[in-house]
Image (tube, rainbow, N blue to C red):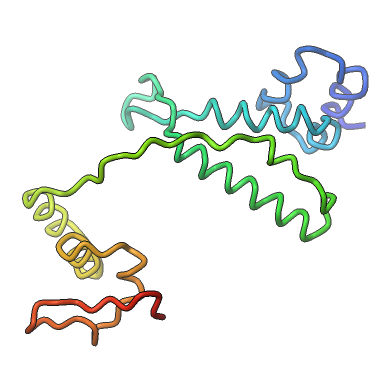
Length: 171
């Protein structure tokens, strides 16, 4: 019998330290997922999302870490939700399972849109690979979103007239 499954067996389900044990990387095996009650499993997901951090220094690995933004938490939550949707579609879990409803969406504050200064754009374009320069130039100077630039066709760019035609939802 798997050692992790034995440690996380029925007797351990009443153990108050189970939640911390499930969050411990040394305990992360498939057995804990199969043996943990759904409520504890959801609590582990919420605790993991809440505890996400990011590096503050690429050089000093001992530098303190900072919590990630709520947008990042929601992005990870969406990835997990997509995984469970796939599991439902493949019938790995019951089609009526709705455990992700118990995982909150984190509130996101409206953030001011940042605009590159002319100096920053010059540096960016000078160091960008040649194949990205048109993309960055159109995004930076015409204000198009990345999805709009990806749909853009060169026949919609009028260099002589100095304008770009963006068709809503065109393919």
